[in-house]
Image (cartoon, rainbow, N blue to C red; front, side, top):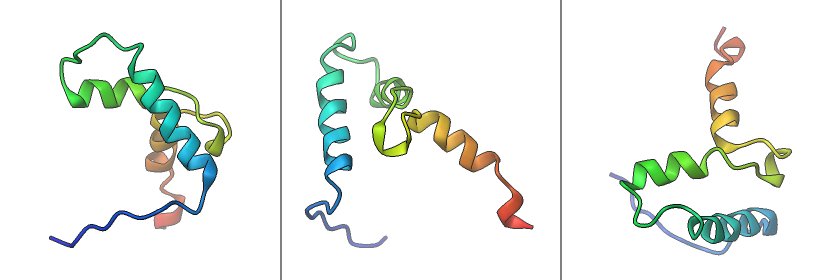
Length: 70
């Protein structure tokens, strides 16, 4: 396993999105049934750094694009 380090972000949009996720967690039924359930719920929220797409939708698009593999 690699070492993990945490540092400051160079992108304020990403920091803003992370803060929005923290705020959205307050509107989720608490406590969540699991961290996975909470993550999947947050993954469907639109984010401005990725053109108002949701992280879940963007992940599905990137995983379905196999043109880079050929």
